[in-house]
Length: 208
Image 1 (cartoon, rainbow, N blue to C red):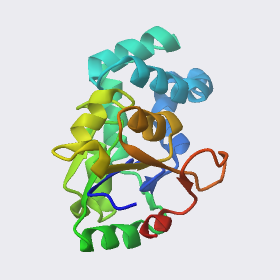
Image 2: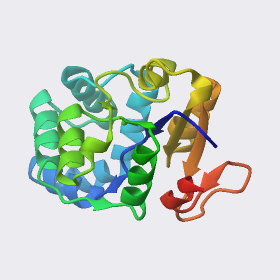
Image 3: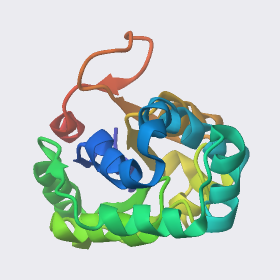
Image 4: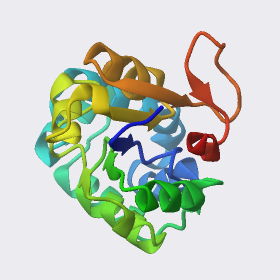
């Protein structure tokens, strides 16, 4: 599949950390005995926000989480959340460096399209020493996947047919791009999904 621009998801595609441990450590001192309830629902709540909002913004997100979790979120808590992410260690997914080296050496344009704030996401890429591979990093402060504008921004001056999205989320990294005329490959390292999807179990399969 010869493409000119490769659009990578970040979390659980390029980098992975123990998100539950990180978030629990943030929320435990704030929400105390309600923390287990929040941890059971935070992924669902963030997904709902991303499906119904165009971008991440502190006030909007804190209002949304307060309304639907029943817990008092403030913009200060959102900022604490982001700042804490700066201190967490990531694991680079197997094969990422090999693939990025190969794609850059063959003149491909590489960008990241991720649904979170710029500050922690860019910092994580820099700490992992892979930031310089990418021409740009588009975060949730620009536009959220799976809204069409996110893929339009990420493809830049390239035609949809010349782009490829790679990520682990069926809706945001596979269905969303394809609805917008962009090919996509699902990164399914644990083989959770059937073969009706164009998918890979290892990132280095992109070199094929």
